Length: 168
Image: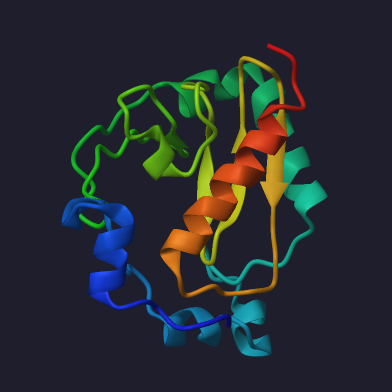
C-alpha cells in the first residue's frame, strides 16, 4: 500500500467538482484481504487474480480476434448513470467502453479512442484493447496507491504512451 487517501478538500481542489471525485467502492481492508493464500485458492471473481501483464494482454488480444466476441465487446447495453463514479456506465456484456461523451478520461482509457474496451483495477491497474488499432494493453503492479489523483495522472500518461505505439 502506498500513502493515505487525501482529504475531501484536497481531492475537491484536484478535481474541481464533487461529482468528479472518485468514490471508494471497495475499502483498503477488503482489497488487502485478497492478498492471502486462502483468497487466492478461492478464485474470487473480480479480485485477487494472479497474472502477468503479457498474459492479460494476450487474453484481450484473443477477444479482439474472435468474431463471436464482436457483439459482447462492442455493443453498449447499459448507459445508465454509474452510482459510484457518477458518469454513464458505457457497459457491454463484458466490459466498459471508452466512448466519446467527454467522460472517457474518467473511464481510465486513452483519449480519442472511443471503441477501446476494458477494465481498470484497484490501485491504477489497466487492461484494455482497441478494436480500431488492434492493440491490447495491460499494466499491472504490486502497489495499492491511496491517492486517486495520482492514479489517474499515472494512468493517463501510461495510456497515452501505450496508444502512441500504434500509428493512426
